[in-house]
Length: 508
Length: 125
Image 1: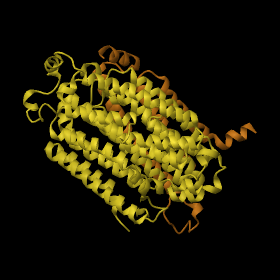
Image 2: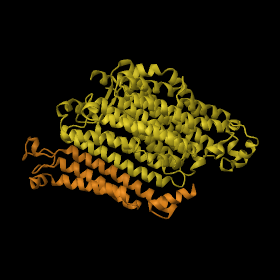
Image 3: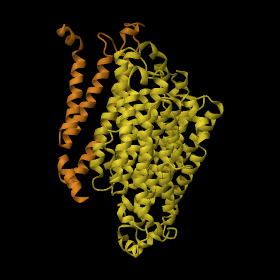
Image 4: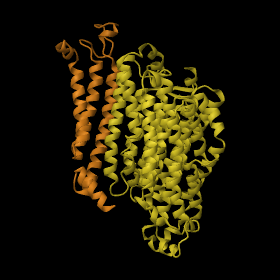
């Protein structure tokens, strides 16, 4: 029995706690510990990913030696490996990026930020690999608590926005837990594989149906599916950029992944589509969310608020993939989890870089930035192309899979929504590209004068030729490269990971 | 019929009422502290649901004794209890974070009224 799955969250939890203890004395050491833990966890995830793809078998680990279904079990299968690699990878990049950004935006909070980041990644990685319904709840709340701590340290309204998010999150978690209770009392188990084995005889049971609805509803709240998204814009706008860059790309996605997990591995195939209209409900909510998010994003002046509304739309693509419930559509949805995580992570990091360098947060003020920080702005253009869905960037291919899935399912309205939303995101992102690269006489000087909100001159000395320093630019560069590489090599991901993952749908 | 319906299910009805009160407090009250109180009522209802679901008349703690023998129906099921214990710990942590956020919000805005805070945020933006 391989110990590998257990190493992923435990390394992070340990690193988080150690980083907290050490970080209070030495900030640099605290950061180093959190970063090292995340890197180790990322490497373990990659090793697990390779092992799972080469053997084709999931790696199972029984916690404390208690044989499942009595004990809790971790299951590192294709989908789980895919998610943990993504989550820990984003974690590494943001942790590299964070110190300078935090020093600038929320000084004095750094010692508590790094442990929270490690714990957040631990919670999300744990959610991805757990094979136990209740354990999923515990990891969900670990991630949520870490996220509250990270988000609340930002601008003036940060604590208030986070409190509202906490209330929504508590309801979401509560519904999920209630659903687990319904399932447990009617099925008699909370191990996912065991529940799946026992469920087929009990599908008519009203408490199983209520349990399924409650669990999905709870996760949909956590996922920010329209119209349950209302907490998102305020939270992302007021958070420190590095926290937003960690939470926006992966947090909501892991809840979406948990719904996929329930659909594929816990409930029998067809349960979400035929026995109950869960999939269709998610689908219409998603379609509405895509349009709503994209349209509202057009009118936003604040960079991060625009990204937040765009996230409301983008997470709904994953929802559409779930709703289509055919292999191609779901592959599209799952591929979009990674694609959007990379793109949104990149956009938030760029936002943080702009704020670090110039102190600007409003889009109209960003006129002429293309001259001031050209490399960051090239990365921005790559992210924008991916968001709009222009080949060969990552955003294109997940949309293609979703469109093929929609055609196969005869869901023409959803097909139209996907096309339309690409056009809408082109509007709000190209508007900003136009601002940034607009050539305005004297814009450079005035921007320099207003740089009082940005960094001081001596801090800037380490930066690359008016750009951001390497510790901030390297994660941006890696993510821009990843956006293109994942796009070009998406068929490898689909063939090695996602096709085996959606196999239960074919069996049904 | 109605009396029997309620007599057999009154703990669950009570739990449903508590859930509703909690959700009402969280959504309808303007005061943030009352929202947090609603949240704790909501969470408590969930704990009670697990405890009620696992309750057995006349059963003992799940540790083997000579007196009760090996009949599993005479022992309580420990799993829901453990789940509730864990959930309570999680709930306490959430309440703690909520209260600290409440405190920070009050210090920054001088009010716990949601409308007043939103108004103040709009003005500063």
